[in-house]
Image: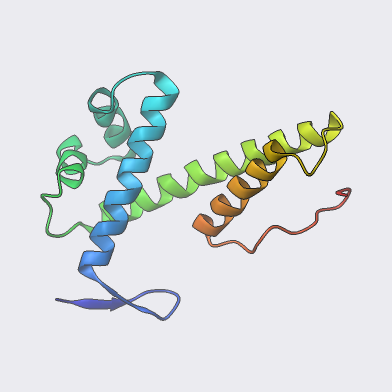
Length: 137
């Protein structure tokens, strides 16, 4: 199996690239399905078309049929999932700001769940842990 060195200097196998692409494609499809209220099978061509990738590639990823993925498809899926995570992170930060403006107790479960989701989104994007921003707390 061919091994490649990522930007971070760690060795990554072709299988790991395929696993990443599969997870990201699934995340993109499910987010679009949730947003539109349509089944995943119906949004797949829309998501693939937006990225300039054949819908069959997404189907093959979903059904674990691919043995490799092109650098172009991998890059497009990677960029799209980064944009999705950035949008989700912005939404969560906004939701947290609104709860703070409403005077909700910062120790309540709702605030804790938002902060946990922010932490997960930041980790997925490779950002540093939650930091106290100007005007917080």
